[in-house]
Length: 277
Image 1 (tube, one colour):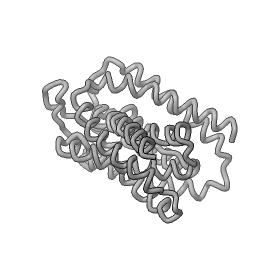
Image 2 (cartoon, helix red, strand yellow):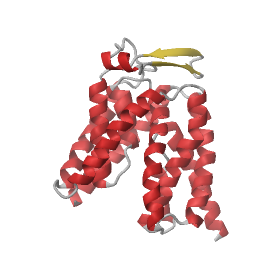
Image 3 (cartoon, one colour):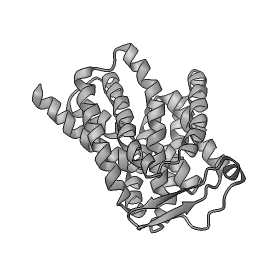
Image 4 (cartoon, rainbow, N blue to C red):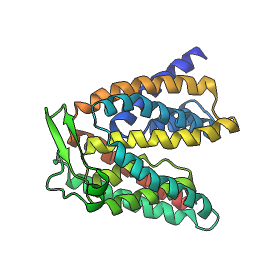
């Protein structure tokens, strides 16, 4: 039993590092690892995954907010779309065949992966106009890029498109019960043309808010098992703290190279799920 706990802890550290760097939370590693390697029931794995997302957000948020990489205004603005979308998805669950949504959002992810490939050598978005709504809400920002060794000032464009993608991501999350970290990063990086580091840091911040609400439901159901969730939370917290430091010293094009295969993997997984839905 002790050996198993240590193994879960080590995997959770890895999940925290990956989740913190890419803005996906730790669930993308934790859930398949617990179910496939340790035979944990899926509902308990999802409960531990939610804890891992909260831990990732908590571990990385301190560094990202301190260094002003997280754009809190954008995060809270887009969280409105995600929350309303999740409520909509819950109501539509009995009305819409989920396989169509799987296909639609798989195509959207593949398009975004293609757009990221085209931006492969772009370190910082250039000549980005400030959208009137972003101007009014003060969504633009500035941060110090440790990899480039200089301050980066950025604008936020295509606010409506980003808000729409986040609403759709919320619908999918509420309807299909899946995470939407990849959609959050995609909305900010591809559509709103924000720097990738700001997108991943802000995604981490947003997912912590969302997961905290969901975790309460899983806790009341008894799906959060302390002997599993405790090492996951500790490991992910350690990993997220390490990952936050690593990310700040990585170039955006390197992060993008890591992110693209994951987007393609999630898209293929959604197509597979849609085929069997």
